[in-house]
Length: 80
Image (cartoon, rainbow, N blue to C red; front, side, top):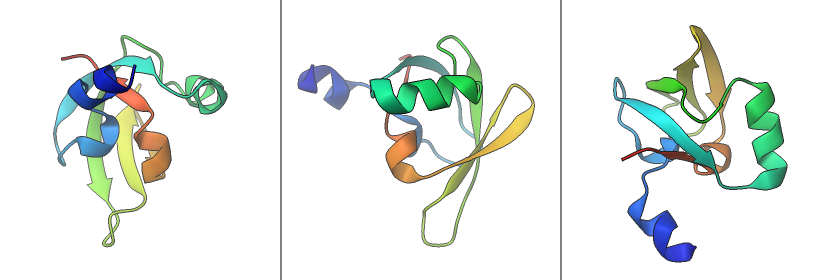
């Protein structure tokens, strides 16, 4: 499983303006919280902004802006 994480890009790795489609959520505990916020596999997201020091970030999901800490964003993996 660790090898797959190396290959897959997470939301944390996205550049501002970049779009991606959620593949899966890596952390079951945090995954439930993210699912409730609309981060559902198959949903397109767009990287919106980064705080000056990099944390937190904002993404656009289902036409609304969601703010995430980097540790949360790292658990959202994208389709390649």
